[in-house]
Amino acid sequence: MTVQTDAYRPRSSMRTLVRSAGVVSAIRGLDFGLSFLVSVLLANRFGASGQLDAFFLARRTTVGFADTIRKLIGQVVLPPVMAAVDRGQPLSLQLLPRRIGWFLGLFALALAAAMLVPERLVALFAPGFRGSQAALTAEMMRIMLPLLPIAVGASILAAILQARRRYLLSEGTNLVQRAMLVLVLALLVPPLGIVAGAWTMLVSGVVGFVILLVGAWSIVRPHAVLGAAGPPVSTTSPSAGGGIVAALVINAYFQATALLDFAFASTAADGSVASLEYGSRLVSLVPGLVMSSLATVLAPELIHAVQQSNPRAAAAGIQRFQRISVFAQLPVSVGMMLGAPLMVGALFGHGAFGAKAIATAAACTAGYAAAQVFLAPSSAITSAIYADPHASPLADLARVAVLGLLMRVGALALAAPLWGAGGIAWAAAAATAGTFVVAQVIAVRRFHHFAMRPQAIDLARNALCAGIAALAGAALLHVVPAPHAVWTQLLLLAALGALVLLVYAAAAIALHVPEVAQVRDIVGKIIAKRRRRV
Image (cartoon, rainbow, N blue to C red; front, side, top):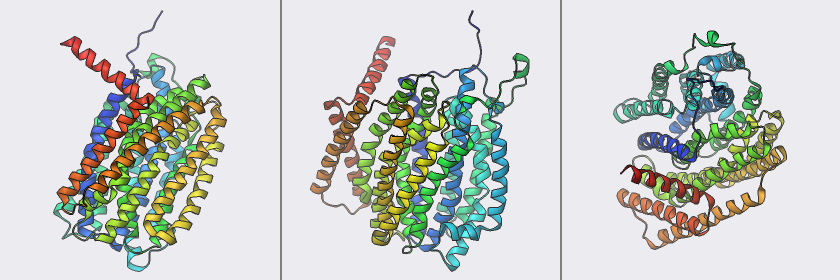
């Protein structure tokens, strides 16, 4: 006899994934536009200056840690929540693992200590800052540090909503926060200074969390009927993966890589931190938008695949994630690398942002865009290792983190003194590629059933498509004279992006890339269904 339940059970199909990815991409696209406005306003008001270096370093060490906390909480919370959803339980805060309480306690102590001595954080993360620049950085750090506990609560709610496929609410709160910062920078700076930006980020974080909590409470509130319906289910599910220590290791690694880049940049010329921030910001908004949207939608499916008892199915799920992410990422990164000077010039080439700053920021943008190609498949591996319930992930994730950091430090130490901020970004790309190779080797040894030859053939096809698209884009830039007006730069940038995407898609069709066939099948089914309705 089949027992009926009102609990939510997610549907898993390629069409559902594409639709969900479209929703997330649309919301983040709006956020993308507001983020561009923030970057343009900051560049116009402050240029690539030491003052803006201080703001970006303070934001990177606070908001950056907040982003790491969101990823950490998502990795710890999402696997047991997905397992509970599969069992038919209603979603609520009662599903959270008990070890979250220990994390919150330790985190509160660390936060209190950091707020007392932000100067020590400046000395650690920006060894090149001195005098008034270091004092300004410490002041803005103290203002923005409360964003960290806000990120904890928001990420717990967002992880539960993600398991429910409710992306609109969790993603939409970012729009409110970004809009508040845009208004302050546009209307109040000047007369207000750079510190006003730090206060605005704190206030907008509080407002965003309140909106998220009010909107999500009906879904995540504790259910009083749970005990009457049956025995309570333990929130320490063995299928939850590897525990908070493993999650701390891998998320600390990703945060450390970013902080290393900025620490080396702080020892270079004034404006190096700002140029590096602009480059990484543009990449996170354009190529990063593709990867983050896919990761948000595919993460539950990846966890489902890894937690199966069939190791062959787990390996196939990881490789599917890798193929989709690389296929989607390559044309965006190629277009970004070719169009970086046009994009930086059109967006920031006015006000206090000079020609040298444009060239440096463009080099940083191109380097970080290249890194995104390797970051997508390696992130799939680390997420899968963490979610694997069949063996402890700590040792494997520690190997990825340690070897990745060693490669990062070595590459940065070589490139930073020679090529400055641009060299730092390209060194990061080289280290990310090396880390992907390490992670792939570890994954093959762990999951055993990787079909490496078909995977290598598919990736080679994708790389060939990207190479053909890059040649077409480079030919366009060679033929067309360099534009100087903003509207002509944007027009050429749009033409470049369209050309790269069209040539990439045509090459993928000609080379029979499997992902093209899947997309074509989905479009065909949608068209056929609409014709039947007519």
